[in-house]
Image 1 (cartoon, rainbow over the protein chains, first blue to last red):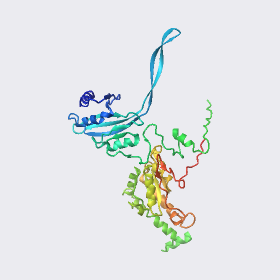
Image 2 (image 1 turned 180 degrees about the vertical axis):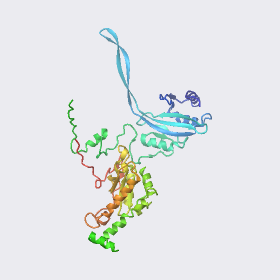
Image 3 (image 1 turned 120 degrees about the vertical axis):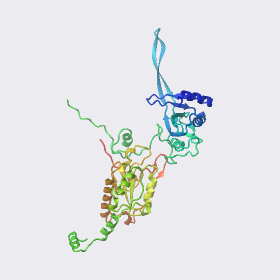
Image 4 (image 1 turned 60 degrees about the vertical axis):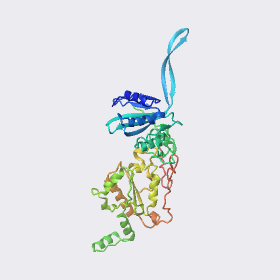
Length: 219
Length: 204
C-alpha cells in the first residue's frame, strides 16, 4: 500500500478543500493516522472506500476519545533590564488548549488485503459543537459503534440512520465515558473502601473517621 | 409432634409416620424449578451445573423453566446492570409464591469487579430478598449445587404456621416488590429500604 504522504497528496487532489494532517504515532507499531476536517470527512471516507488502489471496504472499529481542556506550560526566554543590565530571564507561559472529542476509524481492505488506514475526526469543542459526519452510510458496520460513541461520549453523528442510546437507558442524562462525568453517589456501604470511594462513603458513617494513630516504632 | 424415637421404631416395622408440614416441605424442597435466565459469565457455570457432569437433576432442580409463571427459584447469575435491574425485579414479581432467590457470584451480591462503575447495580439484594448468596467469580458448579442444598435445607426447616411462616402463607405480607424506574443518572429509588439497609459502619 502507498505511504500516508502519498495518500494525503492524492486525497488533497481528489477533495481540494480538505484539510488533512498526518498524526505521527511514536510507539514501535508506528500506526500513523490521518486527521481530517469534519466538513470534508464524508467525502474523504467515500474516496478511501471507492478508490481502485485502496478499496477500504471494511471498517473494523470506531473509537471515541475525550480530550478535556489541557493546560500547557511553556518556558520562554525573555530579555529584561534589571538595574540597567540586560538579562535573559526564563518565564513560564501557561496556555489552555480547549478540549474536543475525537472519533477514530480503522479501515481495512478485504479485497486487496491491506490496512489499516486510521482516520480521525475532531469536534470543535466538548459543549455544543459536537457534530461529526456519520460514516454509517459508507460502512454499515459502523452503525452500532457510532451509536455507542453518541451514547457514552455525546458525539452527534449527522446522517446516522438511527441515532439513539444503545447501552444506557433512554431517560439517561449525560455522557458517562467523558472524563468529567460525575457518577451517582450510591456508595453507602463499602466493605473495603479506598480513595474517592472512601471519601464518598465517609458521609454515611455515623461516627467521624479519625486518622489512625500509628504506634511509635522503637529502634 | 411425634417422638423421633417412636418414629424410627415404627419405620423399622414398615410404618412411615410424618407430619403434613414435613411432607409439604419435602415435596417443595426436592422440586425447586429455577427460572432460565443468565446475565453474564456465571450463567455459563449455571449451565454446566445443570449438565451431565455436575448433574443438578440429582437435587430435583434440573427443570429450568423458560416462563416465570412456572418457576420457584430465581438464580441471579451475573452482573445486574442498572438497565437490567427493573426487568429482573419484574420477572421476580411474575413468579408465583413460594419463590426463592439465589444471588450467584460477586456481581449479583455486590456489583463485584464492576462495583465502582456508573452502570452496575451494587447487589441485587438492594431490590429483592436474597435467600442464598454464593461468593465466587464465577462460582464453580459445585458451589451452585451447595447453594441449592442450602436452600433445600432452608425450605425443609420452614414452619407453616406462626410468625415466621413463609410469605405465601402470610396474607398480611405484600407479595410484590416495587419495580425501580429509570432516572436521569441512577435508578429511582436506588434501593428498596424495606429490603435493604446499609449496615451501620464504625471505623477507626
